[in-house]
Length: 333
Ligand SMILES: Cc1cc2nc3c(=O)[nH]c(=O)nc-3n(C[C@H](O)[C@H](O)[C@H](O)COP(=O)(O)O)c2cc1C
Image 1 (spheres, rainbow, N blue to C red):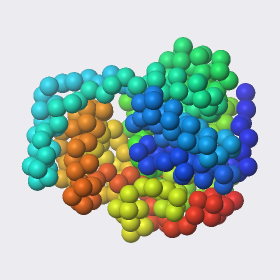
Image 2: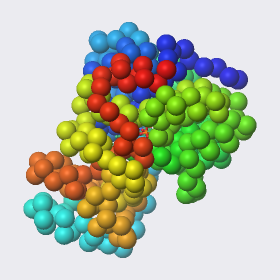
Image 3: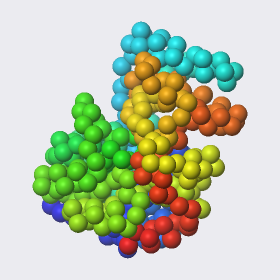
């Protein structure tokens, strides 16, 4: 069952919710890679509008990435402790404590937008869609990609009937797509090598791939595609904030950390005052912690306080360079 999708170059622009814009996604597709819309934080209507904007800019293939929604488990004691740990920062920024803690159900609207707009490649992170959802998308001839951080998760992605799997190593920037209790930290190379013998679907390597040598190493281990996030964050076309781009460009080896403090799920980003201050604090489960810290992150942008921002980037961010999307993508092949 090895069916790949065809691309001019075996490169996928990592979906990056909150960072990707239509022009950036289209530029990646135009450069021969697979552009990917990070739709995780968009509702159905916003997802549809975004897709329409990309379609207006390119006729090359692109994908949409969705978050598998979780029912938050609310333990009032944990919630109070998590709020307490954030209180000094709310006070410093002069913002009220956040009351809204439950995410709205948007998944159905996002999927409808994908079907209505005829998008043919969809990827998921944080879990597996329900069997009925998989069947519905497959009926529409949509190619489905899951995300795994362990061999066990990669096998589960294949068993659920998805067409390909992103194997995301511990170097990866942003959230880990884990959906089992496991906190195993495998490097991308270890994971690609281990997963290759266990699944027959195409394998997409993600995490720390910043150079041609990194990509070639992944292909030599059997990866079918490489997925690039951080290396594209500093492209001219990427509209990540200036603070984010500068943080990537100024980062050094060992500048990043894995933290649950921003959202309740492990994610890799720049070590800063926020990650250090919350290092041993009680953190609410995802997505509650995401809502508890949302105002902090928005206000920190306005007050120009990058020390409280989630500046997602991979472990090899120190190798990032400023260039056009085309130059960055060409540099891998
Ligand atoms: C800023 C940022 C946002 C991200 N957002 C998402 C997302 O919305 N969905 C997703 O599946 N992965 C997301 N990721 C993870 C990427 O898909 C990918 O695994 C990672 O970027 C690969 O590692 P690298 O950054 O070292 O290239 C994000 C990564 C970054 C850096």
